[in-house]
Every structure is written in structure tokens, then in C-alpha cells.
Picture 1 (cartoon, rainbow, N blue to C red):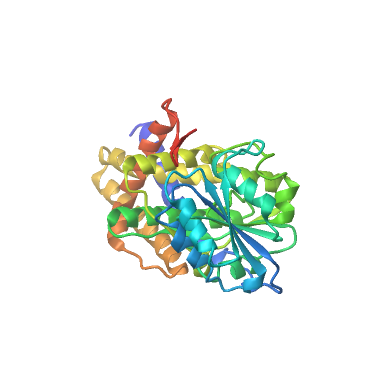
Picture 2 (picture 1 turned 60 degrees about the horizontal axis):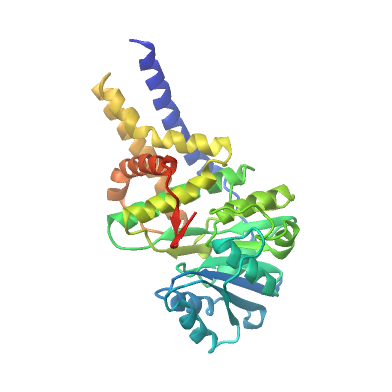
Length: 366
């Protein structure tokens, strides 16, 4: 046996140990928070919309059903230079309910661009003490505002729920599993005292924290605007909380084309390169599972098979507990293909990230 064999064994052990550590932390170290606010302050909900004519009406109708005093809520919609009927459809809903105000955004504020610019404009019109942020293609539950507010503690700056992917077929289920596993890991490291980011389509920021950092127009621009805002809020001394509960679980739609998902992941990679080392280690270790299994085949078929079975069992256990937490059905057929999906997608994303082409996001080049 040469030294490479022991390196392979060491990596295999690290991968399995990482999965086991995630499970232990999930079962015994998750933090819980109060789910009902002591009072009902006035709040502002921000919806950034660009070419969302197919989703904007259902999004706004859902927000109007929020379980929160109707006189303590406003919904601000920012139309981001849409070329479809987004603006017209948003205005038609606003005409029926005075809680909705629609703004057609055509200028940039300071350093802000894209979605960050829309949110910067909306903040200037907001009257609430708390800003709730979601997207036009996202559906949040009726309990969303109350449950996020209920988790506010002293010096809290940002609180996020989680977002899952809805849709039929294996492609949608694989994306949903990816989101839930990633957000599960995010919850664990945040509860360990290593906050990473808010979730841009399911988050709340206090007005105090937002104004303290100067708003989006004064912080460095990033295509992962939620990540950059979180960094600035943490620098300003505020806390960040991630909730993992069905009462704050939003749903969004899967990326349909491979190019869509690669652009989405390339956008996320702009933030991933800055995440804490512990989370980078977890992600890298997860990606190495399938390549390592292939390498093990050249040394010992039984060992390779054993490693693969243990890996699938541990991944299944973590995913099962995560799904159970948000009361979603766990599909065992999905887990069998998940590591292959995640490994191939990560490899493609890395290649797409390093090649010199601009990121295409919502019809804009970055």
C-alpha cells in the first residue's frame, strides 16, 4: 500500500465524519425561538419584481392574506425595468387594496444595482420599523411576519426563514433536496455562532440595522445582495438568526434549463468564496464523495461499496431529519441520485464560474 491509499482512507473517513457531525448537531444543538411577537409593530414588505408577469399577482394576493393586523402592514412593490406586463398587473392589484404601493424603478441609487437598487428605493418609501423582503416568484406562508418577528432578540439585525423548491418530477425534487440540505447546514453553523447569510427571498431586517449600514446604496455592490447586506450588518454589531420551521418556509420554482441553474449557481458562487472556512470545508467534503468512491474501486471493491452505502445512509438520515422539520415528504429515490447530481452540478458550476463570461441574471449581465 502506498501513501495515496492512506490519503483516500483519510478523506473517506472525513466525509463520513462530517455527515455524522451534521446529524448530531441537527438532533441536539439546534436553537429554538419564540414564535409570537409581544407586540405588532408596523412592518413593510418589499417585493422586487423583474419580468414576473406570471407570478406577481399570486405573490401579492398571498401577501394580502398575511396573519397580521391589516392596519400594521404595507406592501411595497418595485418594478425593475420589466419588459412584460409585471407593472400593469401589480398596479391592478394595488388599485383594489391600499396596503399595496407600486413603484416603477428607473434610476440607480448610489452603489446599488439590480435587485439591490430596487430594495434601496423601496426602503426610502417604507414606514415600517421592520423590513420584510421576498421575491415576486416566491410564496411565503400566512404566518411569515409573525414568526420572524417573534424571533427578534436584543441587537438582532437579520432573521431569515427557509425557501424550498416546488414542482413535479425528479429535476425539481433534486433542486429541493439541494436547497434543504444547504439551508440545513446553514442553520447548523449559524446556531454554532458562525452566521453566514440571510436568505434574500425570505428575510427580515430591522430598520435600525439597515439604516446603520447606510442601506444598499452605500454598501459594496454584489450580485448576491443578501450575502453582502449580511456581512455589513454583522460588521455593525448586529446579530443574524436563521429559522428552520414550516411557519417560515417559503416556496419558489425550480430552474428549468441547465443554463438557468448554472447562472443561478454562478451568482451564488460570488458569495460562496467569502463564506467561513468551516462551511467551505463541509461543502468541499460533500462534493468529494463520488470521486472518492470511484478512486476506492481501484483499491478495494468491497471498501468502495461499503463507503458508498454508509455515505447514502448518512446523507439519507440528515435529509430525512431536515425534511421532517419542515413537514415535507422525503423521497428515497431522490437521495440515491442526489450525490451524483450535486457532484456533477458543482463541477459544472466551477467550470462556468472560472470561464470569462458574464453572469446572466434576470436578463442583465454582471
